[in-house]
Image: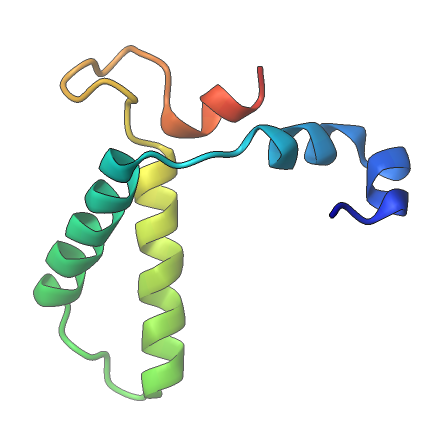
Length: 85
């Protein structure tokens, strides 16, 4: 169910959300990316566990959204672009 003011007021966001879907391969790639990024991070001095987790989740999301849809195709369409057509 989509909130009616969203449909009327923010059409581009509504269309993007309506078009979003994830394949099993997408989920697997996101989990793999999360695991590899989490393993390579050292906890930063002065940050709480919640801050570090939030930062990691944000970084994983950004990295996955900006990856090429076809691995190794650096000039190709990025993951986020498939939902804004």
